[in-house]
Image 1 (cartoon, rainbow, N blue to C red):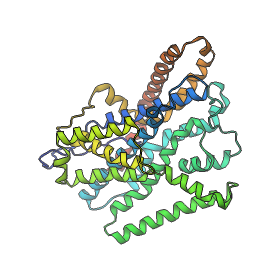
Image 2: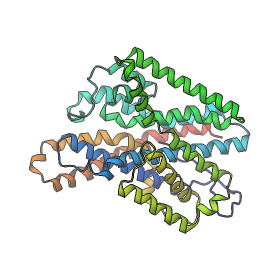
Image 3: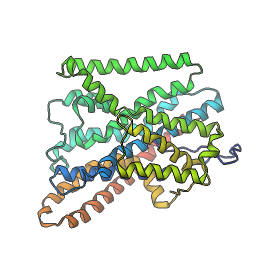
Image 4: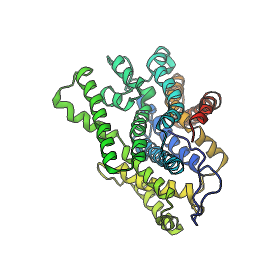
Length: 390
């Protein structure tokens, strides 16, 4: 997940911005996305422990996908705006600096949770997932670890599944592959170059997929279509592209924004979005891509429309959004820790009592760990980003 950098704010009269500002409300968007994922995984852990749970409830079951999808669209929006801004100011994009900024933001705590999940947690009883959740002792340790170390967790997820304690990192792999492709496309000035870049990207992805399928799995060729389909079902790059479309509209100050900014349009679009989410309306094969259109509308309005009908600029919400990457990375390990500690007492607790302990303790510890990580590790590392900023 990425965090916003200072950038111009679009205003309704489309005047040139006079000073760099943060897009407002986007930490609030991160808060919504992160907590949707956290609630999903708490109920998932309870189900694995055989406890009464709401995991089969449609809203809870889909909350994880929808939260990650919201993160994807937000990433596409911010990354695209930054790239367009750099290209517009300097006439080019320094891709090396772009990658260094992404590495400094994404990799440190990604590798912390991967190494912990693969090597440290299995040796600690309170940090070992219950039966029914993927562990590391299933015969695929080295090929799985190798894909995780080259930041391809989504491929590891497809071939071997991921240890539950770092299962959320599959989405980091999708984002990383978006980063491999997108700055080159934005920098290119002709469609011939863009098509060539897409071809190289597809060939490279296919090559890595083929190498692992052939040499590091015992699957047959007859099973290949199944795994290819699984890969693309998780490869939500089009959601990030939709975020990029929103960034382009904002960057060029497209006239359609005048319509999208209208309050009556906002009310109608949000009503439709909530209807889709709460009624379980589904679009086979393109459900999240359809939602990404609504998410893009939401992000564009809360970030750049002074007349937005949604205001997420609340101190606590903004702070939790600021540390949302840590919330996303650490919450599964903490939920399993809490669940294992409570296992001794669960027979003496009612369902209500268990939840009144499980939820506050899990969320509170996740916030505490994420806050400490942000202030004592991530911010110190992020201070080096200025060397690679435009």
